Image (tube, rainbow, N blue to C red; front, top):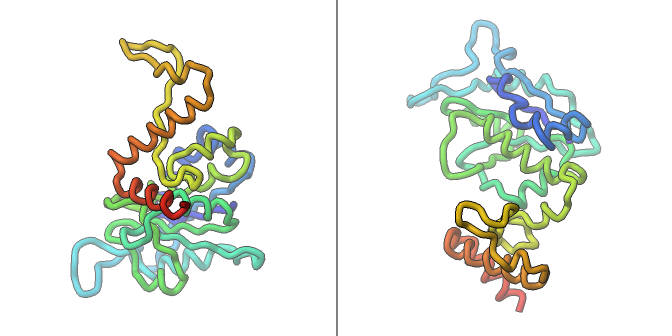
Length: 238
């Protein structure tokens, strides 16, 4: 996977993408990360941003600056579709299913907005896909880009050595939209709190049933929206 990030703040990268398993994958070229500083592409005598036409608060990244930055990229490999991503509250909500799709892509370009955003004509001209990572507002797209990259890259085969840990993640298809069950490790007793006895029983079926019951209870109480999807999936399967 080749990931290119266009940003006003190149020093923000690689950040957490450069440590632990993601950092190892980066060192081993499982994915590459190219950071483009948008400030290098401001047109002579112009700022990288401008005020919104029609009035309003804040500033927008200039279409001419962004055009020059995008034009500097090497042409896409004709064997692979280039995926151009822009993070915006208007976009479809990022999900584990989306992360699975992008984990299989080979050429991803991410444009990080700042201030009030960017000139919309860039999104239209270069067919950017808008994605939202949640119903809240950040100062820019850099943190969203890191979350997107980590969620996608960790699903590339070999990045996480234990395949079962990916299967048991929250939101994976095999969990039918259930949140993950509680997890415990040693010591068995800590601050008057003990590991549930069933997890120490050695009865694998009992453990499986307990974990399923816990996942159902947590999903039902904390995420009614996911619980409704889970119930519907079970009804459709019968």
